[in-house]
Length: 142
Image 1 (tube, rainbow, N blue to C red):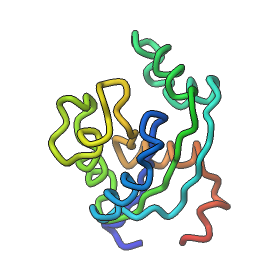
Image 2 (cartoon, rainbow, N blue to C red; image 1 turned 45 degrees about the horizontal axis):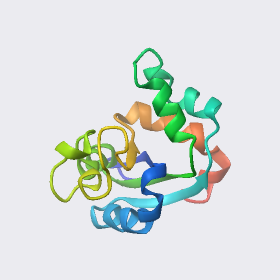
Image 3 (tube, rainbow, N blue to C red; image 1 turned 180 degrees about the vertical axis):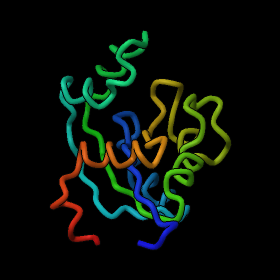
Image 4 (cartoon, helix red, strand yellow; image 1 turned 30 degrees about the horizontal axis):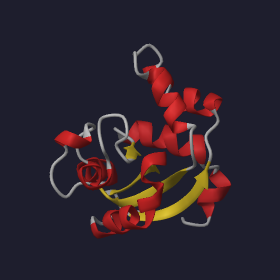
């Protein structure tokens, strides 16, 4: 990886799994390449751990229920300035306010069912990637 190349985590949420192919294509068109991916079913315990930063927020219980309701797809995306580029490709958290052409605008329905999660910083990307992917899973792509 060159100095601008970064990795970030993307997670296609339960509400958008039927659009996973279109979402992945959108990411690739933005210069973000999936170098590792897998479909998993989050348990409530795993969802609580992953979203722990929100544990005091009123929406936490609903978020855990939603994220553990059906399978999700987690991906490690690689590209130049991947964290920022992915945040731009996703659009605003509230799908109704997301810019036209963004993933959340195209595939989300509201602030809760917004199609995709993405790391919000390079530091959090490293933490979130390691939550879902072992070092061994990422060795092949170095």
